Image (cartoon, rainbow, N blue to C red; front, top):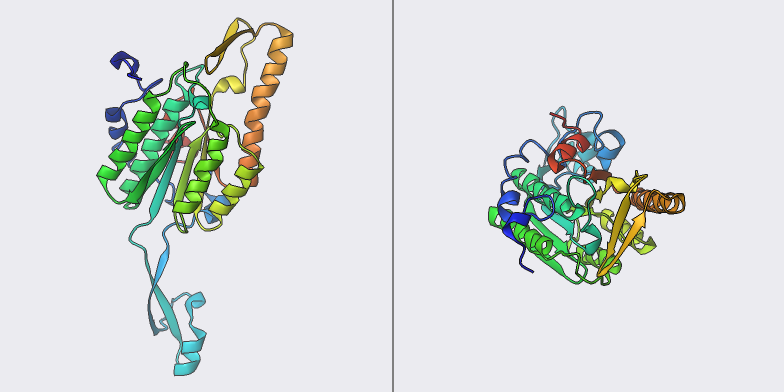
Amino acid sequence: MQVPEQAVDGLVYISLSQLMGLAEQSRGLSFLARQPRHSLLAGNHASRLRGRGLNFDELRRYQPGDDLRHLDWRASLRTGKAVVRSFTEERDRPALIVVDQRMSMFFGSRRSFKSALAAELGALAAWMVFNSGDRVGGLVFNDQRIDSVAPLRSRARVQALCAHLVQHNQQLSASNPDSEGEQQLDNVLQRCLALAGHDHLICLISDFAGATPRTLQLLRQLRAHNDVLALQVYDPIALNVPDKGRLLVTQGQLQIELAVGKRQVHKPLGEFLGGRLQEVASLLRRSQVPLLMFSTEFPALEQLRSELGRQQ
């Protein structure tokens, strides 16, 4: 599908120039930097993010101030002198930015569509990783396909990931048929497991529609040896269904107009949408994956700064 140029406004459809232009805006933001005390990633959550890994460097004589946890007892007993193991920080580490562009994301009742917000968050996350000196890669998926970009410390690799985001985003249309999009969420997590052995940063950006107990299991497997963050994208209508007017609901080629002013429509619709959002958030929390939530009502960068505790 060829999206008309005037439709690429960054709110429904996004462009490559828009995503590449986020490089400067992302400076000063980091998933792994020391966060202020009110940040989601501070306090109890800090231990969930391992930061860069450590490589063993050498054995050397103990010096006052050395961490006693690094004492090598066998070498110390063998030589009769206190010996510590020294480590060097890994120069970089791989990150996978995983972005959902399924049909469930092609919706928005306020400022932007979930799909556009997710693509913008994906690009911001990629630039944050790149700016911190780490390797950038990722997966972009829709209802039928998963495209992957292998992690590399390269601006061209960020551009390749953004190009996949744009391609998937601009293929979304209300006329697209629904497919096995719900199962696709587990498929992409399974692909992450195959790609990320250990010590990866995995940033999942999705509405997590179709999350199941299997999804919970896969998330737990991923976080066993990696740092995993979940960025849940939602539309505020899930929290506050309009109390008057008519709401057009689209599923593939099927469209239904609901009179939300009627109590027999408004109450069950609100309970369903709000309950579903809470159910997914609860599942993500049970996986012990730090959860950041993003509404289509506000700009991505503004919310990212707030969620990371770097309000400026």
